Structure formats: structure tokens, C-alpha cells
Image 1 (tube, one colour):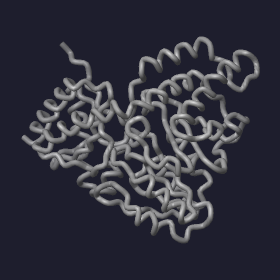
Image 2: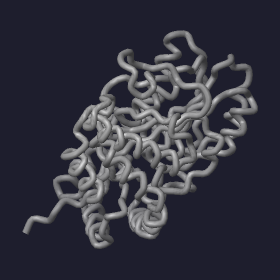
Image 3: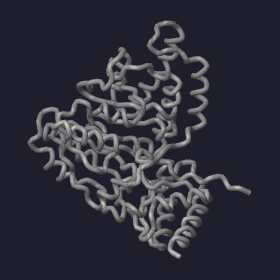
Image 4: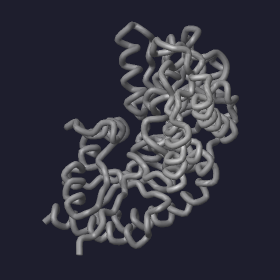
Amino acid sequence: MVRDPIYLDWNATTPPYPEVLQAMALAAEVAWGNPASVHGHGRRARAEVESLREALAEALGFSARDIILTSGGTEANNLGLSAATALVTSRLEHPSVVRLAEALAARGRVVRWLPVPSSGRLEPAAVHEACQGLPAGAWVAVQAANHETGVLQPIAAIAEIAHAAGCRLHVDAVQAFGKVALEGLSAVDSLALAAHKIRGPKGIGALLFRGSAPPPLLLGGSQERGLRPGTVDAVAAAGFAVAVRCAVSAPERWAKLRLLRDDLERALLAHGAQINGAEPRLPHVSNLSFEGVRGDELVVALDLAGVQVSSGSACAAGTAEPSPVISAMLGRHRAEGAIRISLGDATPPKALTEAKVELIQQLATFNA
């Protein structure tokens, strides 16, 4: 009998909740209109969009008016930093921030790269130093939780330092929201989210902001206060709203994964694994390197055996380069042997045990 694949790549994307699919199916029947239209079908679609905005505002402590719906986390990160005259960030960030920083530098803007410790956790003192002497309109951009290692950043401390230096703070919370309690959000100036990371639909995300609105990246109609023109998908909004409401209580469920994750790591440490990233981390993520084994080759071997993991960010898939995050932390050699295992709140413990056995067998084959 062929075993169903064991999916351990929840940081790449998550399977939607059944309630999300139900909400989207209903919305597809009754809220298929254009939310910008003033007639009945448009008003019904608009209600779904505004319900999502209210759910996000309640969950994260922002004003519903200051929430812009986007195509996902990448667009939210780019839009959130669209007014930056200067930028402080690090090579730990998601490609949507790193590539933006590189583009700003190419245009002559001041970009200061923070030093990356081997722990993967940024030092507040380094942020303080980097923020000195920047022009008005400077921003600091940092993830709440890293997409590859799960390492949590000291957001509250960074926010205090950034504001004291006259900078604003943008936080990519795509991987953290719904997984852990988020600290220091009351001091954050803007926040990026993506629905498909919290068991919602793909193709929709949000930028939440305080203070002055960011300049738009696109030109067009007056949707989303003119900050993000284009027709909003009310069906996706209905699913996102359900996922947001589920995410509020989800950290308790995800916290229980820590025991499973730690048990997996202990077993693999006995077979030569090295853990990439120090505590505090997300409870469901393991980034591991194996000496003498290429991470991308191990990922392929595991996939053929029915275990699905990754060797880095899904946004970097298709490239031959090892993880830039692990390279920045621990060097290219360590990155070449790295894989990411990310569990989910629907991962059966029995499946993880089977995956652990398969991984150990594959390592023995590689080292034979």
C-alpha cells in the first residue's frame, strides 16, 4: 500500500482549514460581485472585505481603516517600505525585503546591513549603532520570526531603539502570526501578513500601518484608499477572515508541537545533525545541517520516500545557491548541508515518527 506523503513544509504554505474552504465556497455563491460596485452584489462582496479588515484590526490592535489588502506578504513588505529614504535591515530577511534593500542601494539610498550573529538573533546594540545619523524617513525592517530557522527577534527592544533614533519600524510577521504570541506590536509602525501561512487562501495578504500612509506601488483606481488599486477578491477575503479568527487562539495549539520538534532534533543530533538557529524559536521549525550531505539532495531523496521537507525558503526555489540566511549566519558550507523541517497543527505524531525513521535511514545511505 502506498503511504500518503508526510508533509513537513508548513513554513512554505499551510493547508487551508475546512472552515476556510466552507467560507470561500459560500462567498463564491453570494459575494462574487465587485466590492467597489454600489449595487447589491457589490455591497455583499464589500461586506466580506470589511469583515476581514475588522478581524485583522481586532486581532492585531490596528485601526481597520489603516489596513491595506495585498496579494500576499511580498507585496505587503514592499508597500510597507515604499516611503523609505534609508533602510536598516539584515541578510536574515525574506527575499522581498533583501531584494528591496539592494534595489534602494542601487538607486543611491542609504542601506545599512546589520551584522548577523551565528545565533540568527539580531543584537539590539547593533540596531542602535546602525540607526545613528540617518536622514528623515528612514526605516528599520525586521522579521518577527525567521522563515528558515524560526528564530524570534526582539521586536519590542528594536522598536524602542528605532523610534529613539527617529526611524520607523516595519515588521514582517508572516511566519509568526498565529504561531506565537507577538510582543511589542503596539510600537510597530507597519506589519506584513500572508493568509496562506495561517491556513488561509493563497493570493491575499495585508499591510497594517500606523501614522502616514505609504505611497502606492501601483497606479490605477481608488480601491484600498488608492493605496493599492485593483479589484479585491471578496472570496479570498472571506477565507482570510476565518483564518485570522482561528489564528488568535492558534498559538496554544502550535506550542504543543515543541515537544515533537525537540524529540525529532534529539534523535537527529545523535546522527550528526547541527541545529541552525538559537532559542527563542518558533515551536514547530527545525533547520538542520548534516556534514558531508547536500541539503538539496537529501530533500529529493526524502521526497522520493514520501517525506516532504525543504532546503530553504520556497521563494528561493529553483536556484542553485544554498540558503542565504544560513550562509549569513554560519557560512556557505553549513548552508549547503541544511534542510528545513516545519511541522503544523495538523501533523500527526505517528507521521513525524515515520519521517524521523526515514530521515535516519536516508542519512545512513548518504554516509555509506
